[in-house]
Image 1 (cartoon, rainbow, N blue to C red):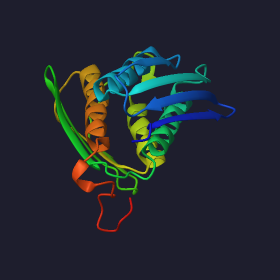
Image 2 (tube, one colour):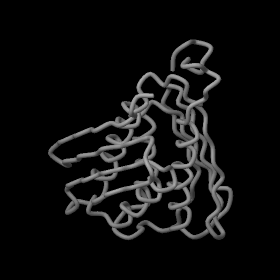
Image 3 (tube, helix red, strand yellow):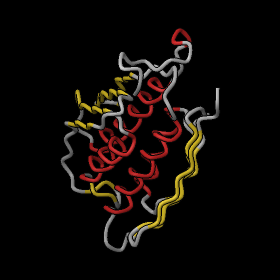
Length: 197
């Protein structure tokens, strides 16, 4: 199989982002966004999805975390889409129910080519570190639309905001890892009645 690695660079007046993503990695990451909490979340995603992720973002953090977090979501989504290529022989669907102390998060992914995002995660504080909690939704929305994937995140239980956020990122990593694995019985075909994803 071909290497499933993508590098995406994106520069605007608000952010300058360099990202390299390997779907078939070992969970190695080098992440520097200037937002420590966000770095921690992305590291959990990469480590538990066994993706190699290198991400350097220089953003207008003097304004707030909005542009950096959303733009990183766009760039990560573009990298996922590029790394998947034609999606030949991938399992397409993936899901994870991930416990983190009192919190239980569900994530389901469909590499359908049709972007859609649903989340019911409930945050009760405005900030986690230097990151606005409302940006967690915007990040996953940006990923799902840039990658053209159907992404659902559901909070089954939980009260600790850090656990809810971290459980979401880790569950996404596990679900995406499952969806991007190869199914040998497909013999190189795309898993769709349409013949394309």
